[in-house]
Length: 414
Image (cartoon, rainbow, N blue to C red):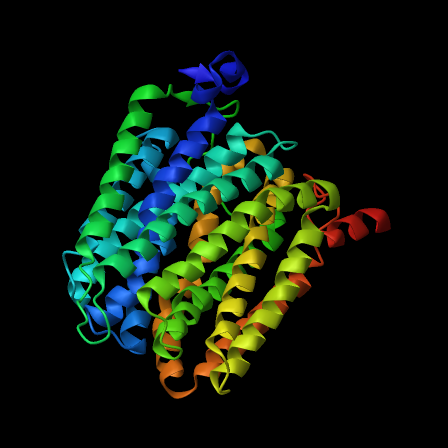
C-alpha cells in the first residue's frame, strides 16, 4: 500500500499517473477493435439492419444504466481492484466477439464487454479525480485522451492492413474472418492487465470515499450536462457510424482509415484542449464543444437526403470526434465543485444518469431511422442546443459553494 502523497518516491513508471496510462492502453486495445469492426461485422456477418443495431446498442447500455452498482461493489473490493476486474471482462468479451456472429451471440459478448467497460469507466473517473491534483488534472486528462488516441491510431492502422491483405479482389471477394482481430486484441489487453496487477502497488487516496448512493442538489448542473451528453452521444455512436456503412457504403478498410485519421487528430489536439481548459476554464471549452455539435448534427441531417460526396460524411465524423475531445471538461468541472469524499459515489451515479436515455433511445430511434433518418440527427442537434444553454451556467471559476453562476448571483443578492 502506497499513499498518493508518497507516490513521488516511486520510480516514474510505477506512479499513479503511469498506472492510469497502462489501464488506458488496455481499455483502448479492447474497445477500439470492438468499435472499429462492429458495424461491418454486424452487417456482413450477422446481417443486421437499423433496428437490430439499435437494439444491440440498447443491450450494450444496460450495464451503463446500472453503473451505480459500483458503489456497492467497492464495499467488497478496492476501487483499483475493481478497475482490474472490469478491464478483464472488457477484454474477454471483445476476444470472444468474432466467434459468435449472430444477434444473440453478439448480444452475449456485448453484455460481458459492456459490463467491463462501463464499470471501468466509472471507477477510472473516480481514480483520476482522487489521484490527480486540481491543478494538473486538465493537462493529465488531455494526455490520457491522447494516449488512448495513439493506441487507436496503431489499432486502426493494423486493421486497414488486415482488411487490404485478407480481402479478395472485386472479381473474387473473400469474406473477412473477424475472429482473429478480436481475439488478438482481447488477449493482449488481458496480458497487459495481469502485468499491471503484478507490477503496481495499491495506491491509497487521501480521502476515504463514501460508499452509498449519493445525489446532491448542488451538483444538479453536472447531472444535467451528463444526462444530455449521454443522450446525444448515443445518436452519434449508433447512427452516425452506421450511416457511413449503410448509406455511403464504407468498406471495413475505409471505416478503419477514417478512425485512423480521427485518432491521429485527437492525439495532437487533446493535450492542447487540456491547456485550453487550464487557461480559459470549463465553460469556454463546453461552449465550443456544444456549438460545434449543433453544426455537426445539422450537417448529418442535411447530407442524408443530398447526393453528396461520401467525404462530407467523413468530415462531419471527424469534426464530431474533435468536439467530443473537449468533454473531459465535465470531469474537471466536477472535481472543482465536489467534496473529495464524493468522487466515487458521484461517478457511479453520474454514469447511471448518463445512460438513462441510452437504455431506450437507440432502440426507439432505430425505428425512427427506418422511416426518417434525418429526424434522428435533428434530435441530436436539439440536444446539443440544450447542452449549450446549460454550459453557459457553468462559472468561469467553479468551486465548492459556487457550482453555477446562479449560485453566485444568489450570494451577491444576499
